[in-house]
Image (cartoon, rainbow, N blue to C red; front, side):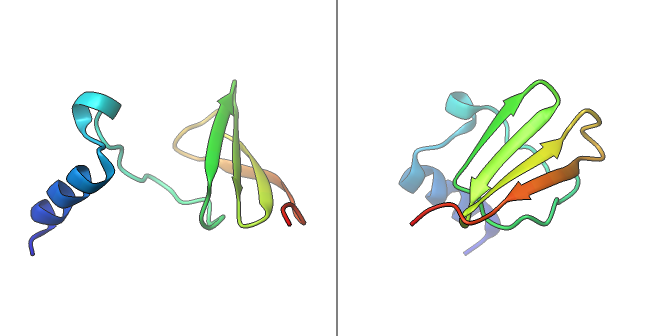
Length: 76
């Protein structure tokens, strides 16, 4: 299966396409914080929650995001 066929299949299964959600963005830099369940942006801050942790990141320079801190021990 080609990469394009896999993407087409994912669109059919998940229901996400460019007309509904916009163009997929390329990864420019990873913060190395692992998987996430949800994200939120407020001003120059990115909040990422997942794996029992809340990460706060500075995205004032989108090309150089920085981790500001992590709150651990969340969840059951």
